[in-house]
Length: 187
View (cartoon, helix red, strand yellow):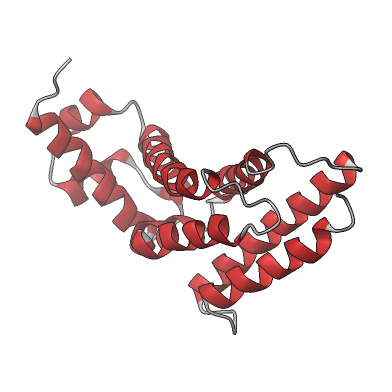
């Protein structure tokens, strides 16, 4: 079914307004009235596209995750399990290209759900990158992988907040080193 330009425009205005509001207040405190005022649309227009504020958040998160997966797909095709640097670099590229909305989503006090989704994607995509590599201790490897993904995302958040002494490139390279050294324990 073809979508009208006005519908696409309205959804984009709503999402843009929501992202701007996220920079000003916690997600849980954003109201439909806040969004319609910021987007300069009617409440009816809002409700044609979304049931509530959290539906907007979910749409934005799903769009970001789809973009992230597209970036990671490029690295997965290379299947360099012992060198996850291309995967991590594509994650970094995704953040840098989408810096403004990602920064606002990552740094909001109520962004826990989105951050957990991103961590799961990082773990999942590294597992996709395994190919036919044999792992001696699957449980231990998964613990290592989850720790690395959590640490990586937390360091990225700290860097975006200006609380880290490392650049995104430094973080990506250091996490790659941790992974490469840690993998020797489990493969």
